[in-house]
Image (cartoon, rainbow over all chains, first blue to last red; front, side, top):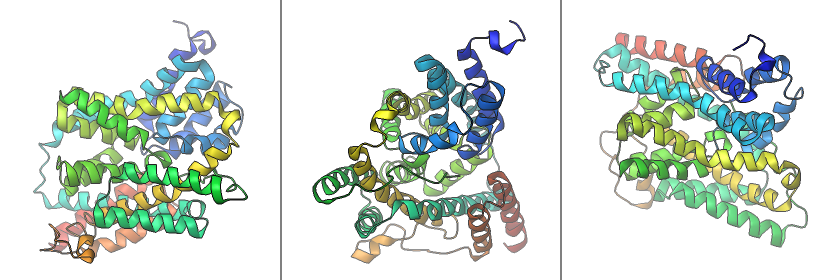
Length: 199
Length: 198
């Protein structure tokens, strides 16, 4: 194997770079986007400047984890299906190895220790806060009309009071959106996929 | 066959993994915690905490952890593969034909209906998470419609965690700090508070 990066196969580079990204970027999501831009735009020149930020709408609109979708997008753009598979494997492999090891040791953690108990409650509280911040950020873009506010309230009530399966809620939102917009809207809802990056 | 079951279960989650994974929480809480009783809400919260502080994207970490808990090493592997598989095909397809559906009225209509539901799921997940952080038990909303709640008794709260919650919301919303800085300082504060107060 040579040191010259351009002579290596892109599929292997994709796997290796995404493996490194997943290993060193803790937290996932938006942080990965910035690092991936640094590597694939500035170092390899495989993507246009600003392309990833433009594509964030697509990455967020298609079902899937932000980190996974970023990997698939770049992989597919560079080398088609094999590229997407290589990038996705690279991004998932560190988690598989590290979490398996952590999960094995998890049972031995002294959970009756006061400090550890408090630390876990602290992290759980912080995660609640992070989700709240995400909600505040996406709210304006998600709930733009009274119809959407009604949908939101119906969905929330169904989950909280009746423990409704979230899958049914999303499906009914999908069907309602189709019927409502195609039958009653004179104008299509503007900029359907346009979202601020979630953290 | 637990592995096949895990694979299909997480493929199902993968299909409904909207807003970059934010809706997943409610699927896990509704399905794994409330319906299948694979783990308690607090245990789920601890898994989430570990997934957040270890290297790797949190969504993949959590899927591996949940899969491992049910089916060991192979369980973690199939759960992760299952979660990522739908997005692999959907995302490749989307990149391939982006120009064609970018302005499609059908896609816009679908997003019009899905977004409020995804927002409702995120809100519900936040309320559920309050039940393992600020409160010691899930908030018994079922009481509002006169239903018995399994958690009605022994409802207590941890007022000492309120500053952490407010700090985390502000720090993330204003983007003043990195997620990791927020998480680790909250862990430290929580640990010290427990040593001092209780």
